[in-house]
Length: 164
Image 1: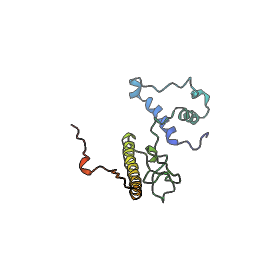
Image 2: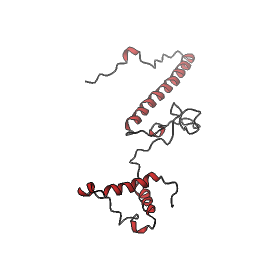
Image 3: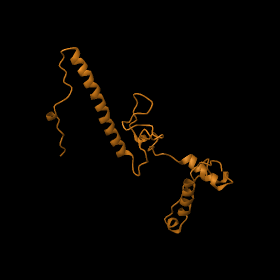
Image 4: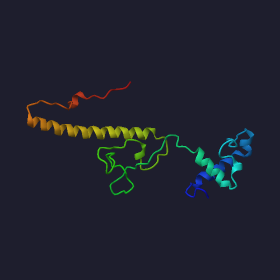
């Protein structure tokens, strides 16, 4: 076979789709498959049936712009984990990954909401790290000069907006 590592499930899925399209029920409603006769994947080019399906997979399979799980987040003990729990890339200083690539497993639904959750968590992580640095810097300033530096709002002034 031309591509031994190609997932057999894709080829079998295409064969099943053809079988399904040729059922009486779908022929009754004029269901048809795409015509590939004018493409690089026209059936007549191939002597081995699976090579036709491999061509279809190679030319027409796409991500639909939802790739994920390519930079897995996980514990230090996981050799496949690229990102730690603070979204920092292991071995590279000053770099965090904040997108669907950190999902340890592919989600069963759309990636939009879990990606927003990752972004919200990242905002909290970055703010916390920045405030810690700011507090340390402020303490250094206080020790060196008589500068009044207030960097945190009192809890009583922080109010959650109510949506009506």
